[in-house]
Image (cartoon, rainbow, N blue to C red; front, top):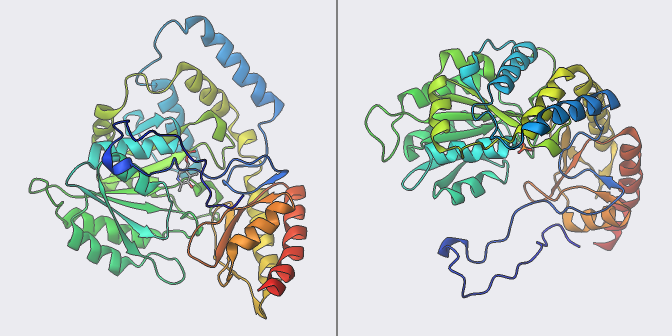
Amino acid sequence: MSASEGPGNAIPASLPLRNDLIGEEPYGAPQLDVPVCLNVNENPYPPDPGVVKAIAARVAAIAPTLNRYPDREHTELRQAFCDYLARESGAALKVEQLWGANGSNEIMLQLFQAFGGPGRTALGADPTYSMYPEYARDTFTAWRLAHRNADFTLDVDATIAAIRDVGPSMVVLTSPNNPTGTTLPMDDLRRILEACEQAPVSGANEGVHPIVVVDEAYIEFRDPGVPSAATLIGQHPNLAVSRTMSKAFAFAGARVGYLAASQGIIDCVRIVRMPYHLSAVTQAAALAAFEHTDEQLARVLHLRDIRQQTAHWLKTLRYKGQALQVAPSASNFLLFGGRFDDRERIFDELLDRGVLIRVVGPDGWLRVCMGTDEEMARFREALTEVLPIVERAE
Ligand SMILES: *Cc1c(COP(=O)(O)O)cnc(C)c1O
């Protein structure tokens, strides 16, 4: 199966599906049963048995109350997000400045529901996460892109020009960016924030300015000493920082994301959330995981080392006489290649050898996320075999 193949659908033409959704496919990376899955940037290490026990105990404790709706405001969990951010990033926030949801996917959707909508535009920086246009479509928000520099860093001048030109209600920046791994330096973010604090929002009242959403899904993989955008929230009421437990925190299956922002932004999001959106089971599991933060994050340093080693190794490989390019990454994945003439073929050949990576990003590139040591050994072995075969075939 090729990476672009969708699951197909069986929607009869007689159903009144929204006109703009006709012909659309449900989005998502292929979920294939292969030995080495390096395609969706998960943490490859399972929770340790102590954490599993704590989750089971917390869920057992609330199970007898499941006839009741959960705490709509999930206050205990918001306090846990708050404590975690203080510890992880040194951000001093109040519980009212935090908000949780079912993955940062839901956080982003809620932001689009509150700040996007008909007549509104959201601005991103290409190449970036392929879910953003879906949130835009689903909320009838126009989606526009400023283009990144050739090295995938943000073109700050072009982005500011686009903000003035488009009048977006939301500017969505990703740091580290997916699929490139690129960080957004604080000085660049400050310039964007300052531009947004002056810029009008097309279709909104005078005195309204865009919000800046920084998606920090992979921020725990950054180099030591690099600050998080969460530390700027106190000075910038229009800044929203989206986080997730899915990646570094090794909790993708639990579906927990969170938002750090001014209380004003949180209160806007509270208007559009479904009542009781975060189940009591989810809240209990997340609280248990936060009781074991050290264990959950135990492999982050190791994965960062593996990323460095893998980047170094990839650069020693050659394709058509030239060394492979590897985009500098502060996340748990690497975008590599740069000049592949037929990346689908490389993807397929790797898949034939039981290694699933991702066809994503600009043409000529592929993305691989960091697995366990054994999985990375399999990846290296497979890629070493595949590159000469693909070259010969072309
Ligand atoms: C993986 C990822 C997310 C996380 O999504 P969850 O819903 O929290 O699992 C968010 N943003 C980006 C850019 C990602 O790559």
